[in-house]
Amino acid sequence: MADSLIIGTVNYTQLREFLNAGEWERGDRETGRILLEIAQTLRGGESISKADAQWLNRLDYLTQDDSLNIPCADLCLIDRLWMDSSEGHFGFTIQSQIWQQQQQDYAQFAQTVGWAVSGGIEWRNYGELIFDLSAPAGHLPAKPFYTEEGLGVGWAGNLASRLDDCQGPDFAPHNLPRF
View 1 (cartoon, rainbow, N blue to C red):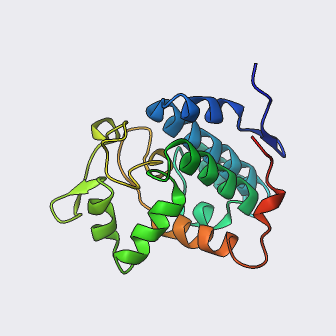
View 2 (view 1 turned 90 degrees about the vertical axis):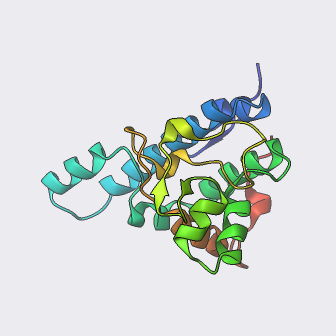
C-alpha cells in the first residue's frame, strides 16, 4: 500500500491514488470533499452565531470566504497533485494562468475551461463536464465550484488569487510532503 499523505488532519492519500491512476472524476470529487472538509473546519472556528454555523456547515460547496481562507499548504499540495498527475493540464495553477489571461473575466474564464457555454453565461451541469485529458486545459478540478445538485457556483477566481498569494515569497513550498 502507498505511503499515507497527510497534512494536519486531512488525508490526501486517496486523492493522490485517484489522480495517479487517471481517475479524474473520482479525483475531482475527492478534491471537492477535501476542500469542503477544510472549509467546514475553518467555519467552525469563526465567531458567528450557532444558527449561522449550522447553516454554513450544511453547505455542500465552497463560499467566497472559504475560497480565500484555504490554508496554503493544503491548496498547494492539491494543486501539485493535479499538476503532476496531469502533466500540467489540470490544476489550480493552470486555472490561475487562464484567469489572468482572461483579464479576470469570470464568463470568459468559465467558457475557456469548459464549465460554461453561451459566452460563459450558461453553466454546464457537473454531469456534463469532461473527465479525461481531452477536456480543455484547466477544466479540473471543478467540484469545489459546484453544488451537490451539479450547479456551478463559481469562486475559481478567488481560489486563483489565493494560490497566487500562497506561492508568494512568504510561502515555502519545499515544506510540503514528498509523494
